[in-house]
Image (tube, rainbow, N blue to C red):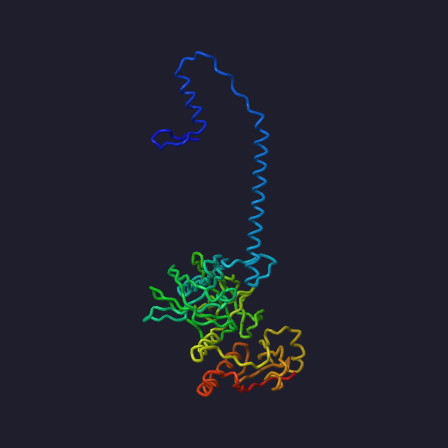
Length: 412
Protein backbone atom coordinates (compact mmCIF):
# COMPACT_ATOMS: atom_id res chain seq x y z
CA UNK A 1 0.00 0.00 0.00
CA UNK A 2 1.19 3.55 -0.65
CA UNK A 3 2.33 5.33 2.48
CA UNK A 4 0.50 8.41 3.69
CA UNK A 5 2.59 11.59 3.32
CA UNK A 6 3.65 13.31 6.56
CA UNK A 7 4.53 16.68 5.03
CA UNK A 8 2.49 19.72 4.07
CA UNK A 9 -0.72 18.71 5.87
CA UNK A 10 -2.58 19.98 8.89
CA UNK A 11 -1.73 18.66 12.29
CA UNK A 12 -3.33 15.40 13.28
CA UNK A 13 -2.79 12.11 15.01
CA UNK A 14 -0.20 9.85 13.40
CA UNK A 15 -0.62 6.14 13.04
CA UNK A 16 1.14 3.65 15.35
CA UNK A 17 3.20 2.48 12.35
CA UNK A 18 4.42 6.03 11.68
CA UNK A 19 5.30 6.56 15.35
CA UNK A 20 7.26 3.30 15.35
CA UNK A 21 9.11 4.34 12.17
CA UNK A 22 9.93 7.75 13.69
CA UNK A 23 11.29 6.12 16.83
CA UNK A 24 13.45 3.83 14.68
CA UNK A 25 14.76 6.76 12.64
CA UNK A 26 15.58 8.72 15.84
CA UNK A 27 17.33 5.76 17.39
CA UNK A 28 19.58 5.24 14.37
CA UNK A 29 20.99 8.77 14.65
CA UNK A 30 22.46 8.11 18.15
CA UNK A 31 25.28 5.73 19.01
CA UNK A 32 24.14 2.59 20.70
CA UNK A 33 25.43 2.80 24.30
CA UNK A 34 23.13 0.14 25.72
CA UNK A 35 21.71 -3.09 24.35
CA UNK A 36 18.31 -3.07 22.79
CA UNK A 37 15.61 -4.67 24.95
CA UNK A 38 14.32 -7.99 23.66
CA UNK A 39 11.21 -7.77 21.49
CA UNK A 40 7.99 -7.78 23.49
CA UNK A 41 6.00 -10.96 23.41
CA UNK A 42 2.26 -10.76 22.66
CA UNK A 43 0.21 -9.98 25.74
CA UNK A 44 -1.71 -13.14 26.39
CA UNK A 45 -3.61 -11.74 29.37
CA UNK A 46 -5.62 -9.29 27.20
CA UNK A 47 -6.64 -11.82 24.55
CA UNK A 48 -9.60 -13.32 26.45
CA UNK A 49 -10.95 -9.83 27.23
CA UNK A 50 -10.66 -8.75 23.57
CA UNK A 51 -12.33 -11.93 22.39
CA UNK A 52 -15.18 -11.50 24.87
CA UNK A 53 -15.67 -7.84 23.83
CA UNK A 54 -15.85 -8.84 20.16
CA UNK A 55 -18.40 -11.56 20.86
CA UNK A 56 -20.50 -9.10 22.89
CA UNK A 57 -20.42 -6.55 20.03
CA UNK A 58 -21.45 -9.19 17.50
CA UNK A 59 -24.32 -10.31 19.74
CA UNK A 60 -25.55 -6.73 20.15
CA UNK A 61 -25.33 -6.18 16.38
CA UNK A 62 -27.48 -9.28 15.80
CA UNK A 63 -30.05 -7.97 18.31
CA UNK A 64 -30.15 -4.60 16.54
CA UNK A 65 -30.62 -6.25 13.13
CA UNK A 66 -33.50 -8.38 14.46
CA UNK A 67 -35.13 -5.25 15.89
CA UNK A 68 -34.77 -3.41 12.56
CA UNK A 69 -36.30 -6.35 10.67
CA UNK A 70 -39.20 -6.51 13.14
CA UNK A 71 -39.88 -2.78 12.74
CA UNK A 72 -39.76 -3.10 8.93
CA UNK A 73 -42.13 -6.10 9.00
CA UNK A 74 -44.55 -4.16 11.20
CA UNK A 75 -44.38 -1.15 8.86
CA UNK A 76 -45.05 -3.30 5.79
CA UNK A 77 -47.95 -4.97 7.58
CA UNK A 78 -49.52 -1.59 8.35
CA UNK A 79 -49.18 -0.58 4.71
CA UNK A 80 -50.76 -3.84 3.55
CA UNK A 81 -53.68 -3.38 5.94
CA UNK A 82 -54.18 0.26 4.92
CA UNK A 83 -54.35 -0.39 1.20
CA UNK A 84 -56.24 -3.68 1.41
CA UNK A 85 -53.50 -5.98 0.13
CA UNK A 86 -53.40 -9.48 1.58
CA UNK A 87 -50.31 -10.22 3.62
CA UNK A 88 -49.59 -13.54 1.92
CA UNK A 89 -46.92 -13.46 -0.75
CA UNK A 90 -44.86 -10.45 -1.80
CA UNK A 91 -46.21 -7.11 -0.59
CA UNK A 92 -46.13 -4.25 -3.05
CA UNK A 93 -45.13 -0.90 -1.60
CA UNK A 94 -46.57 2.44 -2.64
CA UNK A 95 -43.59 3.18 -4.86
CA UNK A 96 -43.06 -0.14 -6.69
CA UNK A 97 -42.68 0.55 -10.41
CA UNK A 98 -43.64 -1.58 -13.41
CA UNK A 99 -42.47 -1.92 -17.01
CA UNK A 100 -42.55 -4.89 -19.40
CA UNK A 101 -41.69 -3.23 -22.74
CA UNK A 102 -37.89 -3.28 -22.45
CA UNK A 103 -37.36 -6.78 -23.90
CA UNK A 104 -36.26 -5.54 -27.34
CA UNK A 105 -39.08 -7.24 -29.24
CA UNK A 106 -40.75 -5.58 -32.23
CA UNK A 107 -44.00 -5.19 -30.31
CA UNK A 108 -42.17 -3.58 -27.42
CA UNK A 109 -40.55 -1.07 -29.77
CA UNK A 110 -43.99 -0.02 -31.03
CA UNK A 111 -45.28 0.19 -27.45
CA UNK A 112 -42.33 2.37 -26.41
CA UNK A 113 -43.09 4.88 -29.16
CA UNK A 114 -46.74 5.04 -28.10
CA UNK A 115 -45.79 5.48 -24.44
CA UNK A 116 -43.33 8.28 -25.23
CA UNK A 117 -45.96 10.04 -27.33
CA UNK A 118 -48.39 10.10 -24.41
CA UNK A 119 -45.78 10.67 -21.66
CA UNK A 120 -46.09 14.46 -21.47
CA UNK A 121 -49.69 14.09 -20.29
CA UNK A 122 -48.86 11.65 -17.47
CA UNK A 123 -48.17 12.80 -13.90
CA UNK A 124 -47.65 11.28 -10.47
CA UNK A 125 -49.53 12.42 -7.37
CA UNK A 126 -48.95 11.87 -3.67
CA UNK A 127 -51.19 12.63 -0.69
CA UNK A 128 -49.74 13.77 2.64
CA UNK A 129 -51.04 14.15 6.16
CA UNK A 130 -48.60 16.64 7.64
CA UNK A 131 -45.18 15.34 6.59
CA UNK A 132 -46.36 11.73 6.32
CA UNK A 133 -46.96 10.35 2.85
CA UNK A 134 -50.23 8.40 2.63
CA UNK A 135 -50.65 7.27 -0.97
CA UNK A 136 -49.13 7.54 -4.43
CA UNK A 137 -51.17 7.44 -7.64
CA UNK A 138 -50.69 8.24 -11.31
CA UNK A 139 -52.88 10.62 -13.29
CA UNK A 140 -53.16 12.38 -16.64
CA UNK A 141 -54.03 15.83 -17.92
CA UNK A 142 -57.51 16.07 -19.44
CA UNK A 143 -57.80 19.86 -19.73
CA UNK A 144 -55.50 22.90 -19.96
CA UNK A 145 -56.62 26.52 -19.61
CA UNK A 146 -54.26 28.91 -21.41
CA UNK A 147 -55.72 32.03 -19.81
CA UNK A 148 -55.28 30.83 -16.21
CA UNK A 149 -52.34 28.40 -16.72
CA UNK A 150 -54.31 25.78 -14.79
CA UNK A 151 -54.33 22.12 -15.75
CA UNK A 152 -57.04 19.64 -14.74
CA UNK A 153 -55.79 16.15 -13.91
CA UNK A 154 -57.85 12.96 -13.68
CA UNK A 155 -56.69 10.42 -11.09
CA UNK A 156 -58.05 7.82 -8.69
CA UNK A 157 -60.12 8.72 -5.64
CA UNK A 158 -57.90 6.24 -3.76
CA UNK A 159 -55.49 9.17 -3.44
CA UNK A 160 -57.71 10.76 -0.79
CA UNK A 161 -59.52 7.77 0.71
CA UNK A 162 -59.34 7.26 4.52
CA UNK A 163 -57.12 7.45 6.49
CA UNK A 164 -56.71 10.78 4.67
CA UNK A 165 -58.50 13.52 6.57
CA UNK A 166 -59.68 17.03 5.81
CA UNK A 167 -56.13 18.32 6.18
CA UNK A 168 -54.80 16.14 3.34
CA UNK A 169 -52.29 17.81 1.04
CA UNK A 170 -51.81 16.62 -2.54
CA UNK A 171 -48.63 17.19 -4.53
CA UNK A 172 -48.15 16.46 -8.22
CA UNK A 173 -44.94 15.51 -10.03
CA UNK A 174 -45.25 17.07 -13.50
CA UNK A 175 -43.56 15.75 -16.67
CA UNK A 176 -41.23 18.80 -16.52
CA UNK A 177 -39.84 17.53 -13.21
CA UNK A 178 -41.55 20.26 -11.15
CA UNK A 179 -43.46 19.33 -7.99
CA UNK A 180 -46.47 21.51 -7.18
CA UNK A 181 -49.26 21.55 -4.62
CA UNK A 182 -52.65 21.03 -6.29
CA UNK A 183 -56.28 21.49 -5.30
CA UNK A 184 -58.91 18.72 -5.24
CA UNK A 185 -61.95 19.80 -7.25
CA UNK A 186 -64.04 16.59 -7.43
CA UNK A 187 -64.15 13.17 -5.77
CA UNK A 188 -66.46 10.23 -6.59
CA UNK A 189 -65.72 7.16 -4.48
CA UNK A 190 -68.27 4.94 -6.28
CA UNK A 191 -66.49 5.23 -9.63
CA UNK A 192 -63.14 5.79 -7.84
CA UNK A 193 -62.23 8.97 -9.74
CA UNK A 194 -61.03 12.40 -8.67
CA UNK A 195 -60.08 15.68 -10.32
CA UNK A 196 -57.24 17.92 -9.16
CA UNK A 197 -56.18 21.29 -10.51
CA UNK A 198 -52.61 22.57 -10.67
CA UNK A 199 -51.02 25.83 -11.78
CA UNK A 200 -48.00 25.38 -14.05
CA UNK A 201 -45.47 27.76 -15.60
CA UNK A 202 -45.32 25.42 -18.58
CA UNK A 203 -48.24 24.39 -20.77
CA UNK A 204 -49.41 20.89 -19.92
CA UNK A 205 -50.20 18.52 -22.77
CA UNK A 206 -53.79 17.27 -22.82
CA UNK A 207 -54.29 13.55 -23.39
CA UNK A 208 -56.24 12.53 -26.49
CA UNK A 209 -59.36 10.84 -25.13
CA UNK A 210 -61.91 8.49 -26.72
CA UNK A 211 -65.36 9.22 -25.31
CA UNK A 212 -66.94 5.98 -26.44
CA UNK A 213 -66.64 2.48 -24.99
CA UNK A 214 -63.81 0.24 -26.16
CA UNK A 215 -64.19 -3.39 -25.03
CA UNK A 216 -61.54 -5.18 -27.11
CA UNK A 217 -58.04 -4.73 -28.54
CA UNK A 218 -54.40 -4.33 -27.49
CA UNK A 219 -53.72 -1.65 -24.89
CA UNK A 220 -50.99 -0.12 -22.73
CA UNK A 221 -51.34 0.78 -19.05
CA UNK A 222 -49.21 3.84 -18.27
CA UNK A 223 -48.16 5.60 -15.09
CA UNK A 224 -45.43 7.67 -13.47
CA UNK A 225 -43.58 7.11 -10.19
CA UNK A 226 -43.43 9.92 -7.63
CA UNK A 227 -39.81 9.30 -6.64
CA UNK A 228 -37.81 10.29 -9.70
CA UNK A 229 -40.82 10.70 -11.97
CA UNK A 230 -40.10 7.49 -13.91
CA UNK A 231 -42.42 6.65 -16.82
CA UNK A 232 -44.03 3.20 -16.40
CA UNK A 233 -45.76 0.98 -18.98
CA UNK A 234 -47.32 -2.48 -19.19
CA UNK A 235 -48.82 -3.98 -22.32
CA UNK A 236 -51.82 -6.28 -22.58
CA UNK A 237 -55.29 -6.57 -24.07
CA UNK A 238 -58.85 -5.94 -22.97
CA UNK A 239 -60.29 -9.27 -21.81
CA UNK A 240 -63.68 -10.74 -20.91
CA UNK A 241 -63.01 -11.04 -17.22
CA UNK A 242 -64.76 -9.64 -14.17
CA UNK A 243 -63.22 -7.39 -11.53
CA UNK A 244 -63.42 -7.94 -7.77
CA UNK A 245 -64.57 -4.34 -7.27
CA UNK A 246 -68.22 -3.41 -6.77
CA UNK A 247 -68.53 -0.92 -9.64
CA UNK A 248 -70.43 -2.82 -12.35
CA UNK A 249 -69.22 -0.56 -15.17
CA UNK A 250 -65.60 -1.70 -14.84
CA UNK A 251 -63.86 -3.57 -17.65
CA UNK A 252 -60.57 -5.46 -17.32
CA UNK A 253 -57.27 -5.59 -19.21
CA UNK A 254 -54.46 -8.13 -18.88
CA UNK A 255 -51.90 -5.38 -18.17
CA UNK A 256 -50.13 -5.78 -14.82
CA UNK A 257 -49.43 -2.58 -12.92
CA UNK A 258 -48.48 -1.71 -9.34
CA UNK A 259 -50.35 0.51 -6.90
CA UNK A 260 -48.34 3.48 -8.15
CA UNK A 261 -50.08 3.02 -11.52
CA UNK A 262 -53.58 3.45 -10.07
CA UNK A 263 -55.22 6.44 -11.77
CA UNK A 264 -53.01 6.25 -14.85
CA UNK A 265 -54.37 6.06 -18.40
CA UNK A 266 -55.13 2.96 -20.44
CA UNK A 267 -54.31 3.78 -24.07
CA UNK A 268 -54.66 2.02 -27.39
CA UNK A 269 -51.81 1.81 -29.90
CA UNK A 270 -52.95 5.07 -31.49
CA UNK A 271 -52.10 6.80 -28.22
CA UNK A 272 -55.75 7.50 -27.38
CA UNK A 273 -56.91 7.13 -23.77
CA UNK A 274 -59.74 4.59 -23.46
CA UNK A 275 -59.92 4.32 -19.65
CA UNK A 276 -58.47 5.03 -16.22
CA UNK A 277 -56.65 2.14 -14.49
CA UNK A 278 -57.05 0.68 -11.01
CA UNK A 279 -54.82 -1.82 -9.24
CA UNK A 280 -55.78 -5.46 -8.81
CA UNK A 281 -53.55 -8.53 -8.56
CA UNK A 282 -52.72 -10.12 -11.95
CA UNK A 283 -55.03 -7.86 -13.99
CA UNK A 284 -55.99 -4.20 -14.34
CA UNK A 285 -59.62 -3.09 -13.98
CA UNK A 286 -60.40 0.18 -15.75
CA UNK A 287 -63.29 2.58 -16.09
CA UNK A 288 -64.17 3.59 -19.64
CA UNK A 289 -63.64 7.26 -20.45
CA UNK A 290 -67.22 7.28 -21.77
CA UNK A 291 -68.42 6.77 -18.17
CA UNK A 292 -65.81 9.17 -16.77
CA UNK A 293 -66.99 12.05 -18.94
CA UNK A 294 -70.64 11.40 -18.11
CA UNK A 295 -69.65 11.63 -14.43
CA UNK A 296 -67.85 14.92 -15.08
CA UNK A 297 -70.87 16.22 -16.98
CA UNK A 298 -73.17 15.39 -14.07
CA UNK A 299 -70.81 17.10 -11.64
CA UNK A 300 -70.63 20.22 -13.75
CA UNK A 301 -74.43 20.50 -14.11
CA UNK A 302 -75.70 19.23 -10.74
CA UNK A 303 -72.65 19.55 -8.48
CA UNK A 304 -72.67 15.79 -7.94
CA UNK A 305 -73.05 12.51 -9.79
CA UNK A 306 -76.62 11.18 -9.88
CA UNK A 307 -77.15 7.44 -10.08
CA UNK A 308 -80.54 5.74 -10.03
CA UNK A 309 -81.16 2.80 -7.72
CA UNK A 310 -82.58 -0.02 -9.80
CA UNK A 311 -81.94 -2.87 -7.42
CA UNK A 312 -80.10 -5.49 -9.43
CA UNK A 313 -76.50 -6.49 -10.04
CA UNK A 314 -75.29 -7.43 -13.48
CA UNK A 315 -72.34 -8.37 -15.63
CA UNK A 316 -71.73 -9.00 -19.30
CA UNK A 317 -72.89 -12.43 -20.42
CA UNK A 318 -69.44 -12.94 -21.93
CA UNK A 319 -67.93 -12.84 -18.42
CA UNK A 320 -70.36 -15.36 -16.90
CA UNK A 321 -68.88 -18.82 -16.12
CA UNK A 322 -69.88 -21.61 -18.51
CA UNK A 323 -71.65 -23.55 -15.76
CA UNK A 324 -74.10 -20.66 -15.24
CA UNK A 325 -74.83 -20.31 -18.95
CA UNK A 326 -75.75 -23.91 -19.71
CA UNK A 327 -79.41 -23.68 -18.63
CA UNK A 328 -79.79 -20.36 -20.51
CA UNK A 329 -78.42 -21.76 -23.77
CA UNK A 330 -80.80 -24.69 -23.59
CA UNK A 331 -83.64 -22.24 -24.09
CA UNK A 332 -81.92 -19.32 -25.89
CA UNK A 333 -79.06 -20.77 -27.93
CA UNK A 334 -78.66 -17.59 -29.96
CA UNK A 335 -78.06 -15.24 -27.00
CA UNK A 336 -74.49 -14.06 -27.43
CA UNK A 337 -74.79 -10.53 -25.99
CA UNK A 338 -76.57 -8.95 -23.07
CA UNK A 339 -76.21 -8.50 -19.33
CA UNK A 340 -76.61 -11.37 -16.90
CA UNK A 341 -78.66 -10.44 -13.80
CA UNK A 342 -76.73 -11.98 -10.90
CA UNK A 343 -78.92 -10.74 -8.03
CA UNK A 344 -82.09 -8.70 -7.43
CA UNK A 345 -82.91 -6.83 -4.22
CA UNK A 346 -86.29 -7.69 -2.76
CA UNK A 347 -88.78 -4.82 -3.06
CA UNK A 348 -86.53 -2.90 -5.47
CA UNK A 349 -87.80 -1.29 -8.70
CA UNK A 350 -86.32 -4.26 -10.62
CA UNK A 351 -88.10 -6.74 -8.36
CA UNK A 352 -91.41 -4.90 -8.76
CA UNK A 353 -90.91 -4.87 -12.54
CA UNK A 354 -90.57 -8.67 -12.51
CA UNK A 355 -86.85 -8.96 -13.20
CA UNK A 356 -85.33 -12.03 -11.55
CA UNK A 357 -81.91 -13.49 -10.91
CA UNK A 358 -80.68 -15.32 -14.02
CA UNK A 359 -82.50 -13.06 -16.50
CA UNK A 360 -80.58 -11.65 -19.46
CA UNK A 361 -81.00 -7.93 -20.13
CA UNK A 362 -80.97 -7.52 -23.90
CA UNK A 363 -81.99 -3.90 -24.59
CA UNK A 364 -82.34 -0.63 -22.74
CA UNK A 365 -84.00 2.45 -24.20
CA UNK A 366 -84.22 0.69 -27.55
CA UNK A 367 -80.45 0.00 -27.69
CA UNK A 368 -78.93 -3.48 -27.68
CA UNK A 369 -76.51 -4.14 -24.83
CA UNK A 370 -73.25 -6.05 -24.85
CA UNK A 371 -71.23 -4.50 -22.03
CA UNK A 372 -71.97 -3.19 -18.54
CA UNK A 373 -70.56 0.28 -19.32
CA UNK A 374 -73.11 0.65 -22.14
CA UNK A 375 -75.95 0.13 -19.69
CA UNK A 376 -74.35 2.48 -17.18
CA UNK A 377 -73.95 5.19 -19.83
CA UNK A 378 -77.63 4.89 -20.87
CA UNK A 379 -78.77 5.19 -17.25
CA UNK A 380 -76.61 8.27 -16.65
CA UNK A 381 -77.97 9.92 -19.80
CA UNK A 382 -81.52 9.15 -18.69
CA UNK A 383 -80.79 10.60 -15.25
CA UNK A 384 -79.39 13.77 -16.76
CA UNK A 385 -82.35 14.18 -19.10
CA UNK A 386 -84.91 13.62 -16.33
CA UNK A 387 -83.17 15.69 -13.68
CA UNK A 388 -82.78 18.68 -15.96
CA UNK A 389 -86.57 18.68 -16.31
CA UNK A 390 -87.00 18.51 -12.52
CA UNK A 391 -84.21 20.95 -11.63
CA UNK A 392 -86.37 24.09 -11.44
CA UNK A 393 -89.07 22.30 -9.49
CA UNK A 394 -86.88 20.57 -6.90
CA UNK A 395 -84.02 23.06 -6.43
CA UNK A 396 -81.53 20.22 -6.79
CA UNK A 397 -83.24 17.71 -4.45
CA UNK A 398 -83.94 14.69 -6.66
CA UNK A 399 -84.29 12.06 -3.93
CA UNK A 400 -88.08 11.76 -4.31
CA UNK A 401 -88.09 11.76 -8.11
CA UNK A 402 -88.41 8.64 -10.26
CA UNK A 403 -87.24 7.89 -13.75
CA UNK A 404 -88.65 5.30 -16.11
CA UNK A 405 -86.33 3.12 -18.20
CA UNK A 406 -87.67 0.68 -20.75
CA UNK A 407 -85.78 -2.62 -20.84
CA UNK A 408 -86.15 -5.88 -22.74
CA UNK A 409 -84.94 -9.13 -21.15
CA UNK A 410 -85.13 -12.89 -21.49
CA UNK A 411 -86.75 -14.95 -18.77
CA UNK A 412 -85.19 -18.42 -18.82
